[in-house]
Image (cartoon, rainbow, N blue to C red; front, side, top):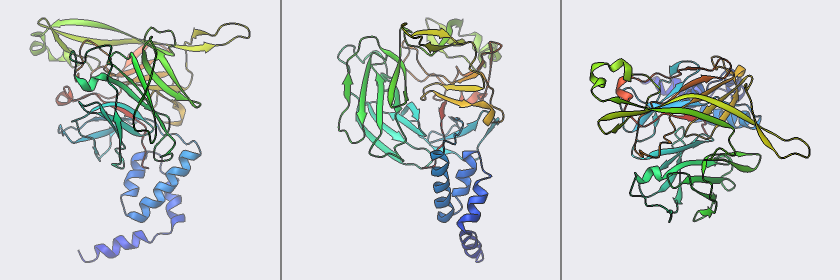
Length: 365
């Protein structure tokens, strides 16, 4: 036991240039996290290396935050769907607040008072934002207050731009309201609009919204609602083990939604003509990651195991009739080339009633 401090200090004295050579061989963010846990010197070198990789546009692939196998209410697991394995470490992400966004490596959490907190689960750092304004158009009594907020999206990583990031929130439960916040603001600025939004991203200095009516969609999801008698659950559990089901009790029946397919559209702008959306049957070697997170796109060939021309999706809890935790049932991967639906992460039976899984872009900063 007396030799342990000497051994640790020996590793801690390794020159930074040697450690940089080791870091060049590390690709998954999970390896970076393990590397940085050795000692403070290694952590400092790893953080500097990660900043340089981000500045040079080296992209990570989104990973999936999932319930732990033992059902912890304070921690969650991190799964690589492309490698088909779950990391050995767990992240401190409690279940007492609903996750309503994932952007630039930060999670957006909301409580019943509509206070939004940004959480970096890799560093433990948090940023408290002002309460989201309450809508005057609709009563909040009909559903859980934390589902009043649909999605939160960031313009940049607050770790890199602590005084120059923006936040946009879609709220009102039905996406009819949006509000904007700049870092340092004491209150949200509501933005008047009437069409309502289903999704939003930040691209080239602007927030771009997706309307509820489909007038500005890039990707459309098609799904159906099914009903089955509840007693079938005990007689044939395999039927209900299907990973893309979402349940709700309706007049003695279980209600579940199932994603069937996706269609992708591209904005076509011809000289002298009005811009119009044209269906795009292929996204080539790209892969999309959709859900409650900020929508993300990666070059699939850079990541072994990632399916090109595919859409990876998770349960985004968009059913306005049932604002309550549904469990991460409606998720999978859709191949645009052959129009087939597959799975990426298979839930354990004990995880079926836990809050939904969510994509996150790993960050250590």
